[in-house]
Image 1: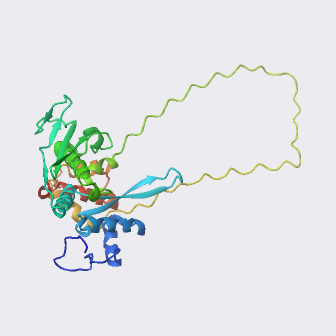
Image 2: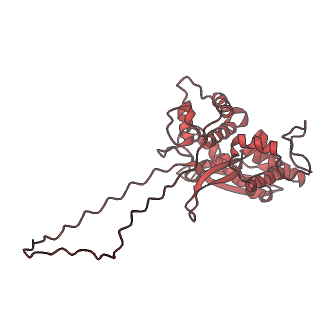
Image 3: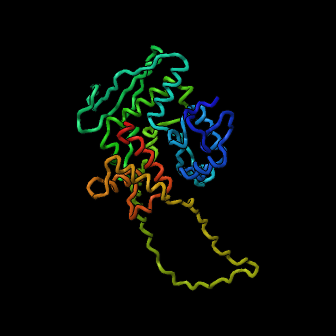
Length: 322
């Protein structure tokens, strides 16, 4: 039987027992959720992970995020998809796996460490922690993992921490450490799936390096003018005419789809739910720019993929999801 938990009422989006792939109506809905360019193979892997984990892709418990990457072999831009969930999805998968195996599942206290190397069970300084440590206890065996701030912090274009990571530094880093520990404890159930907190750093935009100074031109040797007359030589008649310069190859970046109206409504509702109002004082525009790593002239400039990423992060950070 399928492991999907949503069984209260069968709809066109319900994954049925014995189903082997997404149906056309399901694919149509998924494309509205941000995977419009996913191949059939990508969707097949996504379907397998959704059924295997029991998470509902249409309730955004599990989702695919596409990121543009340049293929170093072909030098072409390609969209690579990562299957992600929130930390709550990770906890649900782990709990179900432990229950199936009739095993106990617990946690030790999360610890944070500063630059002084001292571990604490609560983080009170106003500066971010340097590391967080989480320990999962499965059937009496401990699985400990440490997440470093320098490796997981999501940054803005100027290199500073994004709004959510600056506001909730200890919480965000603790979620990364917990995800690492859970994946150690449940490798068969969590392999190939990552949390949104872990993957936030994948969208970091690093400042372009300063161009190296050009070397000063070497002084040309002084030439003396020759008084000897020079007779011009005509080119041979059979010499082919010089070919026109070949046109430079034009590399076109992939077309970018802009935010949809349903995404816009959902995004601004979640912004308000997280305390980012539109009164100009709560940093709504600053938060969006910190996530996408660029300045906006208009909210309509947000791309469809960027809107999906913002919605996912806001869902994970909502008060009832903390």
